[in-house]
Amino acid sequence: MSRQHIANYLDETSREARLDELALARGGRVDVVGTSVRGLPIRAAVIPAAGLTLDEVAAGNAPVVFVNGNLHGVEWIGGLCALGVLEALGDVRGEALHRRATVVVAPCLNPDGFRRTADSDGHDTIKNLRTNANGVDLNRNFPRPDRLEREAWLPSRLPLAASGSTEPHRATFRGVAPFSEPETRAVDALLLAHRPHAVVSFHSFMGSLIPPKVTRWAHARTYRRLAWAYRRGQTRFFAPTIMFAPFDVFTGELEDHAHHVHGAWSLTVEAFPAWRSFRQHLQAPSLFARFNPKDPAHVVDDAVGGAIAWLLAALDHDRPST
Image (cartoon, rainbow, N blue to C red):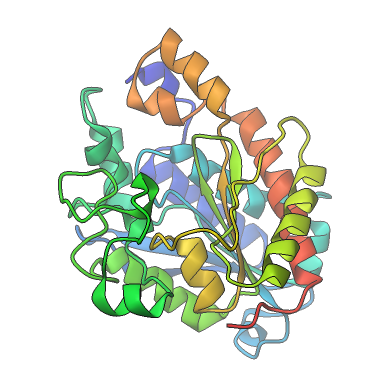
């Protein structure tokens, strides 16, 4: 990969230092919520809603929103977007969100994949850079809410590549069982501890908004309204919504798990528009360039504005019933 390209991003040390700095500046703390296969910490900042102390967070005196990134190791832009939301809590863009909700931000849910990407010589496969140290696509390792699929851990009923693979050599290998990986167990523990009202997960590639599979038309309509709120918060790109509710499949993804199991409005944001990814890849072919813009600032700014608008709109709705 281009060292000049990757230099526009925070390395592991700088990312964690920035998380500590922003948490302190916003009156919060940083918790270790779990560890990776290799024993690296998975850390999350907890920022109390304005006027609350950290001691009052556990009492549930304000709703919680959870923002995360880098569930796939190579998608560094997702971590920058998550940190961008945390940074925005101190300016006019994030003032309303800070006033209304406690904000939990975990910029890197796959520290092993992140480190492998940093150490790559540019000749790795997407399988090596996307997954965790066990070769598992963490965003296919959550339990599937559908009863039959959940009990048998069967392939999805529709043969979609995005639904996760049972073959270990595939980039979307979902693991041997739900929650087989320590990283997904850490995320589930965080969701149990904080019971977020809404979740935004930042990814890359496609420049789109992906809500969970839902089984109720009322939920589908709400997600469409929330998608329009996201777009109103954007400043540059139009993010199409990929949604086939209720004719969709469960994939073992975080947004499905957060919605159906934890009762949270949930959204995956693919922050990097596909056309820009394709153009950039032609100019400087590398996996890192395919998933991360050379100049991330504009993409981060756009994603942060959209995500804050989406989270505020989600707070205006009662939690989805599970």
